Figure 1 (cartoon, rainbow, N blue to C red):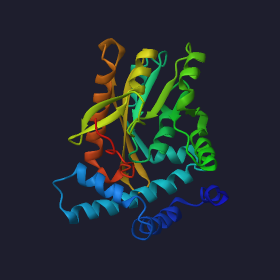
Figure 2: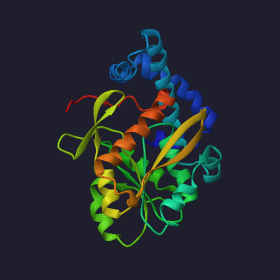
Figure 3: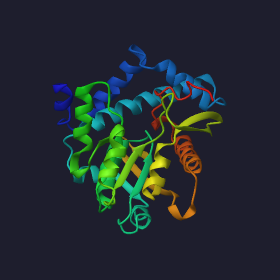
Figure 4: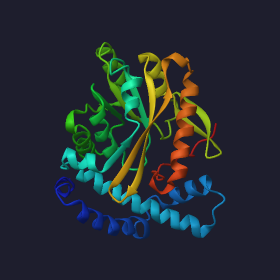
Length: 280
């Protein structure tokens, strides 16, 4: 654990070099979730041949290793350096959708690009508390490290189990909730099945329920890699309270935006999650 913390002080160029070695270890030596990644890619891109899918697999692991070391670097990285490496488009939506930050706002994103760096880039464009909602990790030490990284520059990380009580406590305070909503719901959680890469796929209904409860606009944030260690963040309006969209319609818009983002740069999504392990 101490080694992970110390690695955050290393220059990014050194960390990326280590990541190049790490990706080979993960893919070729350890075979970390390789069967899961392979099955996911085959289901998502059935038109690609075996050689194309193998090349994509290897790119997925290179990206995974790069993002891992970049997240560690974020523990010590100056805010100005993070800002230089995240070029942002559409940030005016954050202000207009929240009525000049007087109303709550929900930003939905996915595990693509460098979602942790993107969290810090949002901080530059909002004038209200930023609350990243997360699922605690099983490893307590790593979970503590991730909370520390996410909490830099004034963000207020919040475990998903505490969201309802926390929102009730701060119901009069407009805040921006940032949520990663692309992973599979657990059996028994409220979900909605949509077509995702041509397959029935379950998505959490929780973000849409929160949008209704808070009377909040919903924005989609897309993080695209433009070079190693450099990203572009784009914001897209998904829903505003005036539309009166139902919960399922909001989630369908999110799923559609997510699929478009992944298809545009598939190697930068987190394919290690067993996304199609259940059927309706």
